[in-house]
Image (tube, rainbow, N blue to C red; front, side, top):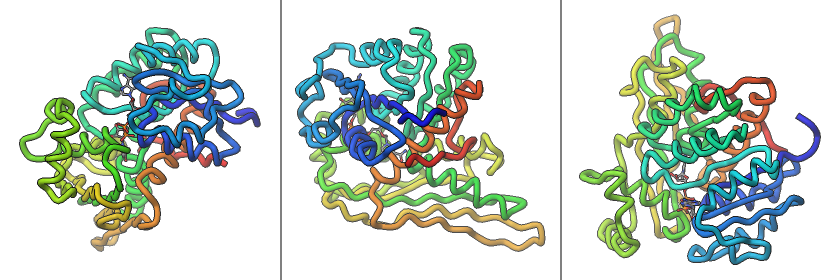
Length: 331
Ligand code: NAD
């Protein structure tokens, strides 16, 4: 890896895309050179003005910013920029609605013949399985894709891999997250995808809800969602590397409060196992309440993107989970 900053493209300019722009502005080792949303793209070879992106209202589009271009196919235009060498790596901050959306985006990069390094913050187990199904094609395209690189899965699942080293047998991994966001519209996909975990809901039903329906659903629950037994790819990613022998040993649940930025509960990952001496115990990894969801998703996602590029430069191609490699540190 040369000393020049890694040029990053971000797909999606919603809550996490904007947070990525804000965090990239604080990094010497990476530079945001392209970003898109549903309505357009913004590209600048010497770096996109992050404050414009960060301060863009949720109802606006990056095409409205100086240098922005309206587009009916922003993903296609971003792929063209990639082919033209406008960036080195991609972070996907797109909605996982439906489960096939991320696989379709990756397939487009593959079919365009643009070798690339990627990371994402994908959450759903079924979507992750579809992504792993693209491994052969991604390898043939000489690309490297690290998936599930947010907080959960991501930071917390990586911590579980480290925690598992003390034990001969792992009994359970329990993740409980707390997220506070002051305004649900800043993180529409995150909120809709959490709603999809409510009893009787599906990803498709959540995707079809109007904004007014989301608001009344939140209203009816006191603007708080308490979720148990979520379908989160932490299970698949931990099974893949042998931390657990079956996905049902991993449980994920949490509390989302859409009234305030204060976390409603502390986020923890607790791994319980038995040591070589037969002692049973638990390691717990606790996130500081002061760290927001955005900090705990984007930090790891950029660290993993740097790792994806490192792997690609060494000829290690394919689709990997965040449990298979350590994130690197981005200065
Ligand atoms: P958001 O709704 O705020 O933003 C999504 C962005 O994607 C918007 O800018 C939208 O215009 C853009 N977009 C949608 N379709 C597009 C298309 N076809 N072409 C180009 N752009 C398109 O979303 P968010 O709340 O920032 O969440 C993003 C993702 O992050 C979600 O999938 C969510 O599940 C995930 N997430 C992961 C974690 C984790 O810990 N792993 C935590 C929170 C969120």
